[in-house]
Length: 197
Image (cartoon, rainbow, N blue to C red; front, side, top):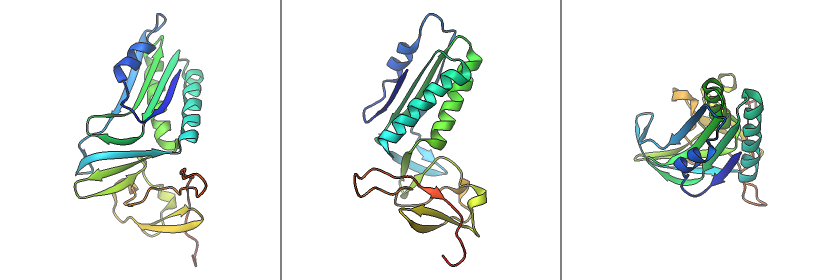
């Protein structure tokens, strides 16, 4: 199993070639690349940040779970951090298996679960501004009259999101709090605002 977080260019072809073995009948690849637009806006570049230690630990657990859950032989899971330009690979998921169905299912499950659970955040830099995007819609049950509340470092921050596609945040700051001790991102819980707050 190859599980990495890197600041360097991801050698996708090398990783795909390196995972192939005699028992495999299929290798499924998800190569997530930076596109030149998002939600109708021209993208200049993306900046990725992570809570590295936690993200790497969670990625290892996901890779191991995929092997057991889908019965695949091997998994490579690599995510890049830092500034990425249009066309560059941000995340690579490669699954080797005796059968294509298991390889497809595991690959899809890995990228979807990684995007939802692993503490990696991206800032989309557009020609006309920037936003931090988590890649997932803001939960409907957490919306309060067009306002979303995030608990950041013990303080509630309200972000107005009326009519925003997918409920994505329009923040200049990342959706996490940095620890005063080590500068590492902390976790964020999303909750409803209580009356009087």
